[in-house]
Amino acid sequence: MDVHDYYGQLRKHYIDMPKRQRFAVSMEELSELLACTRRNTQMLLHKMTELGLVEWTPGRGRGNLSQLAFLKSYRELAFAKAQELVEKEKINEAWKLMEPFEDQAIKAEFMAWLTRQFGLQQDTEEKDVLRFPFYRPVLRLDPAYVFRRTESHWVEQIFNTLVKFSRGTFQPQLAHYWESNEEHTQWSFFLRKGVRFHHGKRLTARDVAFTFQRLMASSPSEWLTSMIEAITITGTYSLAITLKEPNALFMHSLCTERFSIVPEHTGELGGADGFAKMPIGTGPFRMLRNDESMLIVEANELYFEGCPHLDRIEMWVWPNYESSEGWSVPDQQSQLAYFEAQLKQQADGKKEQLEQVEQLEQGSTYLAFNLARQGVLQSLKLRQAIHYGLNRQQMITDLGGIREQASTGFLEEGIAADDGSSYDFSYAVQLVSESGYAGETLKLYTYEMPSNEQSAEWTRKACEKLGIRIEIGVFPIEELVACAEHRKEADIILGGEVLGEQPDMTLIELYKSDTSFVASGLCLEDRAFVDEHISLCLREQQQEARLDILMRIQERLKQQFSLLFLHHSRQLVGHHQSLQGIALNAWGNINYKDVWVRRTT
Image (cartoon, rainbow, N blue to C red; front, side, top):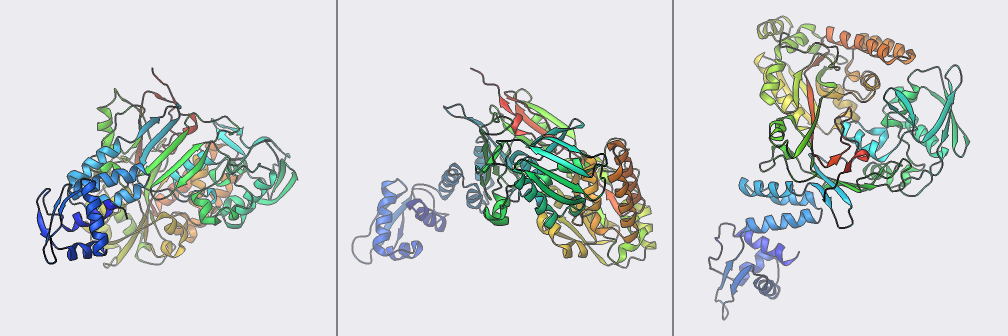
C-alpha cells in the first residue's frame, strides 16, 4: 500500500471527524489501526504531513498523546483515488471503492466525471480512440459458444467467416470463390492468400477444417453441423465439404458467427477459457484486453479488406450506467452511446450535438413454458390464465426502458401488434379456478440483465393477483444455457430473441437447438411438429417461404399457449455529427469498421 492507502484507512476509521479539527490520539492506537510498528507509523505520519494530508504534532515524552488533524475528507480522498484508478484503466476497482458510499452526491459527482471520459479521444498523432460504457463485461467470445447479441457483434469485429450474407446475396470473405455439384452435396472453397490471424499465423485450409471439426465435436448448434459428412483438405488454400444430403441452408449457415474461422490448435492459446476471453481471429480489430473493467480492441492494420478508420475502441464496464445518478446523455464532441429508450427524451433535447439512429427491434421477449416436465402447467387453462392475466401495455407503461410495443410474435412485420385486447383479468381468474391449480409454486427463471429481472418481478406480481405463486431464479446466461438441470427444473423461462441479419436462421436455432429456452421445453407432440417443419425449411430455397414455414411453428406454439410473447424493444444510438458511417445492424449495434471521423479545423 502507498501512503494514500494508509491515509484512507485512518480517514475511514475517523470518518465523522471534521477537516482541520485537531484531536488527541496515542501512537499505540494509530499503530494498531495501520497494522505497523510505532517507528513505521511515525514515518507514515511524517510523509502524510509532507503531502499535505494531515497536521501532526507528536506527543512529547512517553504517555503524552499526539495531536492530529485531517486536511482531506475521506470523500475527497476516495473521489481522487477512484479517478486515479479509472485513469489506470482499473474501472472495476473504482466501482468497488465508490459503492459503499451512502452519500449519493459523491456518487453522482463521480458518474458525471466518468461520463466526460467517453467519446472520441484524439491524440497528437491523430489516432482516434472511441470510448463508450456498457453495463456488463463480455468475457466469452468463442464463436462456437456465443449466445447473446453483444457477444455475437464483437465476434463479427474480431473474426471472419468464409462467406457473408449481405443485401440478399452471398459475398466473399475468407473464401474468394466457391462452387458445388448439381446436387449441392459437394462444395469446394478457395481461400484468399496472405490473410493472417492476429497473432501472425497465416490462414490455411487446415484452420478452416479445424474450425468445422471443432464445431462438429462440441458446438451447441448440433443441428447445423450434423449436415456435414466429411471435410477434405485439397490444398494449402482449398478444401472440400461433403454434405449428407442437399441442404438449402448450408451456405446461410456458413455466414453465421458460429462458423467464424479460428486458428488451428486454439486450445494451446490459453485454453478454452483463455481463448474465449482473448480471442484471436482475422477480423478488422484485434483484442488487447478483456476483463471485468474493460474491453479494448485495436485496428488490425493488415486486415485484408483494409485497415479500419478507428484506431482503438474501449468499452468501459459501468453496471447500470443509464440508471446511475449523475449519468446523462453526453454532449462532448464525437460522442457515441447506446441508449435505453428511457433516455430518448434526454437525447432529443441534445439533437444539436447528437444525431440519432433508431429502429424497432426484430424479435421479442417471451415466456416459454416447460411442457417437457410434468406439473401443473400441463393444464392448458392455467397457461391461458397467465396469458390473459398479463397486461402487456401496462408492463410497458410501468417499466418503460427498452420496452416499446406489445408483441404477438417474433417478427413485427406482418404481425398485428397486441393492442391490449388479449388482457382479460376476470377471464384469467376464472381460468385459474377451472385449471385445477392448488397453490403450487411455479419457478420462473431468467438470465442476468436488468430489464429481464424487472420484467420477471412484474410478471410475478401480475400472477400473484391471479392467485398464482411464482418464485424467481436469476442466473448468468452461460449457466442457464449450459445447465440442462436448470432448464428442466424451471416451469417458465423469461427470455428474449433478437433476430439477426438472417431471421430464418435465428428462428431455426431457437426452435431446434437443445440449449434453446424454447426448444428444451417442448412437449413430444410440439417437438415432432417443429422437427417436421424445420426439415421443410432445410429443403426450401427461398427465404420468404422458409419464414412462412417458421410462422406456422410460431402459430402452433401460440395456439398451445406454450409460448407467450411480451414486447418488442426499441434500439437507439446517439452520436456526434462528426462520427460518420453510423448504421445499426439487426442487433442494434454498429459495425465499427465502417465508422470514421470527419475532422474539423
